[in-house]
Image 1: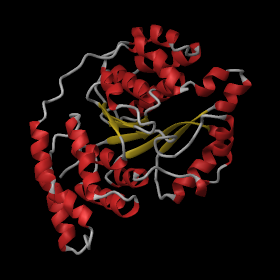
Image 2 (image 1 turned 60 degrees about the vertical axis):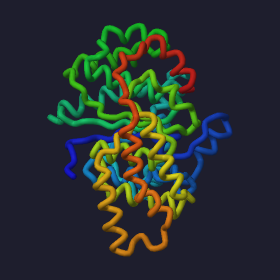
Image 3 (image 1 turned 90 degrees about the vertical axis):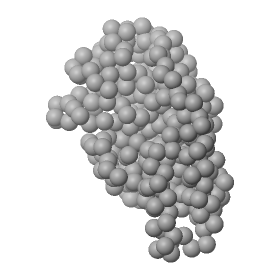
Image 4 (image 1 turned 180 degrees about the vertical axis):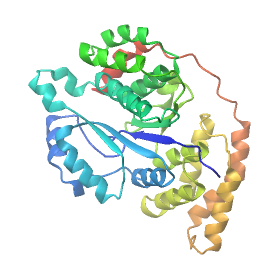
Length: 337
């Protein structure tokens, strides 16, 4: 199974990789002073990030965490054995000094220019063919920003349409100008391969249907791994390792693994491609004695043929028009806060 290259994974951190709370001032203080060893990653997130890196993806971390937390975040990632190329954090101290209090929580005016400027940097380095996978959470702002970014790159949304979006989103003029300047410097080409949204708040997946089939809401990182496997971004052995982790460390049983797979198929996000490769991986690990007494793992991998038949019975997802971003931005910034 060959992998398409080159590839870049852009990961959010808070509520996507790390379990963080920002609902109250006390939450903010606790997060700011939490030691790296006490910070907790979501089940399977560390493994999936490492598997993507091992499969050849470059990793860019883009977070709304303040720049002052860089050392703690980097220390946590090193504890987890995570490698990354670049990390962008929010300049909240500068925002406070300039009395830009709205910018502290604003994600649209922060993340969209940051993504576009990072893409310009790729282009200037001769890496224009690089495809991207974007991973965020269900605060709604990530889904909005990532989809808008993807449609700007592909030319589906013209830069001229950004004015009303920024106005309704109350984006600061210099942030808006930076975004427009960056997008005008970019060639139009579809570069975002997949958007994965972690349902940390357990938002209904249908809430994200407006963004089309490119965006996949997921409940757990085993599901995210299954999507990335079909996208040819991680190998079958990585799916095996993720499944093993969820069974042995996170108390998933075989039926929970099957439900995770079937849920994505029912929503039209998995086609059941390369099932034979997964079955071969199961047979290889079983014959090597790695399956031991893991009845739950055996149950999942022996259900793959039935899952493939289920996928084949599902109607294909139809193409949808691009979202009305100007109408959606108010909801995005409300949930993003």
